[in-house]
Amino acid sequence: MTLALETIGLKKTFGGLTATNDVHLRLEKGARHALIGPNGAGKTTLINLLTGVLAPSAGQIRLDGVEIGGMGVEARVRRGLGRTFQINQLFPDLTPIETVALAVSERSGRGGDWWRRVGTRGAVLDEVVDVLERFGLTERMREPTRTLPYGKQRLLEIAVALATKPRVLLLDEPAAGVPEGERHEILEAVEALPKDVTVVLIEHDMDMVFRFAERITVLVAGAVLTEGTVAEISDDPRVRAVYLGEG
Image 1: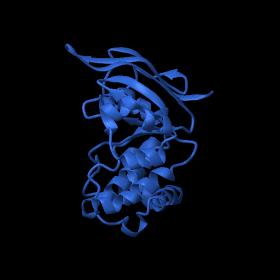
Image 2: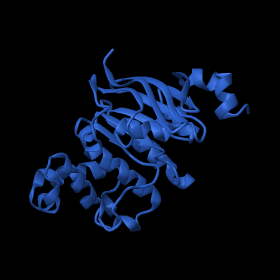
Image 3: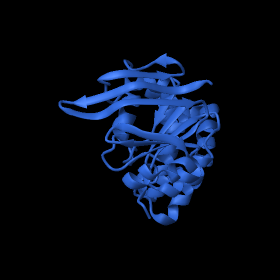
Image 4: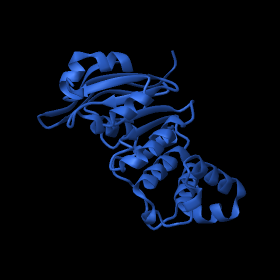
């Protein structure tokens, strides 16, 4: 088994509060994995530990077998660890084509002149348009991001993350705040992500989780309650009691 991402005894404390407690995860390459749990379970804290926003109090994080726990955020992105956020982290005045071009240029180490690269280098422009087309954003790619419907903004954030060419992609509640009628676009985009990219989905929309995931990890109070297939998790009485609801 080739592991794309692994945590060993991962722990994070804030004073006397333990937010993440002895978390062990093992994700194979190409996995479609979901992370669920009630509010306050520690899901976003775990993502922040994986991406370097927070430093662990104990434990290890391995990306493709390499320990990354001491690396900064940018170093982890360069090694192939990408993410999205619960709340969009986009530039409202940039257009989608400019936003994705910035991500492509940053990946290639030329972020300082991204505007010149997208305007003069056909390969960069072709890649940017290809990414936008994948997410159904080409028709509005020259409009300011702030004018896009919120569902399109969420798609753009996933597009930006994919433009960094991650090997592991962490999606932190991609459907959060998206109107019900637009959620199918998010699910279709997530389902269509490249098969060689390992995807971890953090989401409260259980229909999306059950349609997307092959395996699910349940966090409660910062610790892993259980892990299993969709069928195993949906039938587990402990999960129903603490999260899904007996009904």
